[in-house]
Image 1 (tube, rainbow, N blue to C red):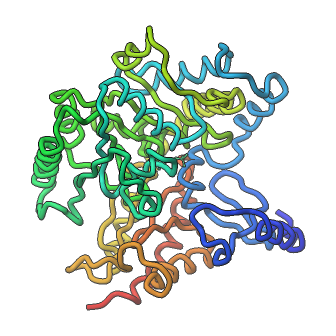
Image 2: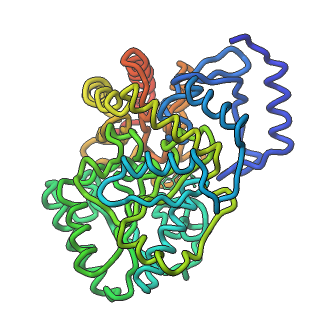
Length: 450
Ligand code: PLP
């Protein structure tokens, strides 16, 4: 691509003057002006190209600008750009059919939203109306979105500024052996104690007051903590015993990210509601939704569902979903993500961990990996304190800067970096990313203390 620094400067100036950015102190940020993107890469106006190890916000599962999906969106725009949600529209029906075909169990009805947070909002509403109960339980170390119910469910510091304290949310600890809240030493111990803790929390809250338990199948931004064998099945059993709706949030983990259509497929568990967004159409047009079980759909068979959105099932977004799901099947993209995880990223990251004392743990699957960076491997003290900013966050900032200098755009959250490229990332691209991480981890190693 041709460099055009003058255009880049103009784009940046208008952004700085008028765009109000998410999660940011507006005067303390310096957004990169991006000129274009293709596949696993994007580039700026100064001639720098980056391998995107973030997939945007972990959503461009098929990479940028897949020609078939771009063509499908263009074709749909020419044919029927938009239409109201109360009507039956070909691409909306087909998107729902294709999604229902892939979701586990009897999650066969699809309520469309514009993104993940709205999916979570509606899952919560459905669970409350289905059970007639007020409370929702969710895990610490989680993210469920930035709207009212979703941010209250969220179990990380992004909740704090918006915490209403009245949302009827009860948080609990989910399993995470490396930083075990239960002083466990084995996965089996962690699993058993986490289930007991959940059961005890339910007992003390009053089981009859709890509408739903909401969990990310594999928590994403909070650290890609793959659950121990038996945990999700155990939660399923607890939900069944108390008549609690089990909601799995697959907004980040769904649609190929873990090397399966849904992360739930790895754990052989079927929730009552499953929320999705992001990978459903790789975010080419905003789309999310809730996949609904037969029993919950039945609750709204004869009485109206009291919720809706102007753009529910937007034809452009649905056309992008239909095309994305077709492309993913044709090109075996889910299988490819599993292969890259098993044979390239997994082994490659573990090999880096052997050589870099700043790597405390490597965990993940598919194209969904976290490196937990530490000051000391024995104590497992995080490389930066929880929720660190400014000077306290300097080691992670130095690590990220080293990645960018060598052409890799890293995902960084607290003391972790996540390797979350597109599901279509090639073996050569994944290895290129590993080589840059290798260099940048040497910078992190400089902060390790004996
Ligand atoms: N749930 C999970 C697991 C997510 O990772 C996210 C976003 O990162 C959301 C919900 C919120 O989705 P959105 O930003 O589309 O509202």
